[in-house]
Image 1 (spheres, one colour):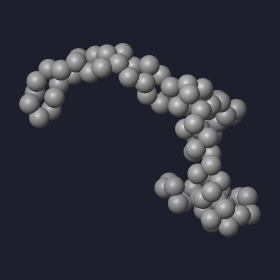
Image 2 (image 1 turned 135 degrees about the vertical axis):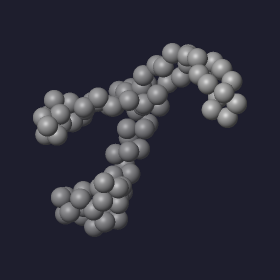
Image 3 (image 1 turned 90 degrees about the horizontal axis):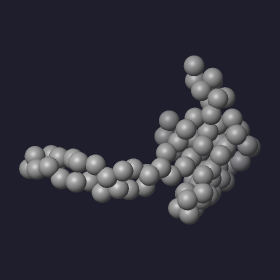
Length: 90
């Protein structure tokens, strides 16, 4: 499903125009992004949890030169599905 398909489904389900549906979807994405930027997890009960996870530094290989390099530690967004979502997908 593409973002435009999601916008169409949201607009249809909420009785909105496609423009209003796009604004709603964009608003949700912005709110999730803003919370994750400050390190706050986003819990959507029954759906899942968005959070930031710390990734440790690790060795890697430059694919162009095959040179061994050290990849730095970083933060990465992650999603863990909730029970209801897992059950619906089964």
